[in-house]
Length: 193
Ligand SMILES: [Zn+2]
Image 1: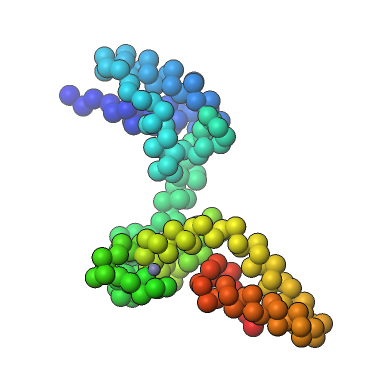
Image 2: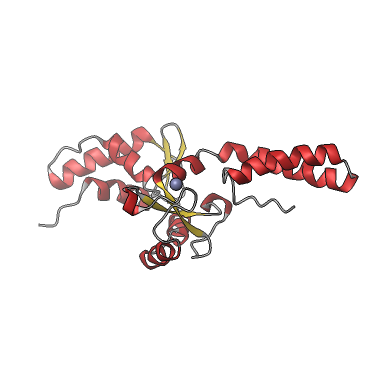
């Protein structure tokens, strides 16, 4: 007998109610009673199941305790992800090493395929937009989101100083932007000297 899984039960509910913000208790009430009706079993830990679907990108967490399923964005997210063939090509091009520290699988380091320009900024799943990073540098990069505004600000200030011929300010901005470059932080925001 092909019995419905807990995951499928939650997905079914959202697929039948697309593009709507749905409160957590509503989901739980429906899936637990429907699951019992169809399988005669208790739905274990519905919270965990919902959370997992949110983490995997199937559901969008709208606010605390509120979720949404958008068929269009789920599809888009899939298109933004690298295929297995692309990953292989990027790995081969980058020689199975982190492009920042040079450590690789041989050094016992886990290698990730990273979007140079992040997906959230419209970065596409192309070979050109892919790079290999070790787990540590991939983690660091994700945590440097908050420095993006700063980098953009110094680029603007740099341009302004150049236009004004303000050498002192130009030198200051150059030094700061060089620190960004040296540490490979926010590389997707390009500073043109
Ligand atoms: Zn690294």
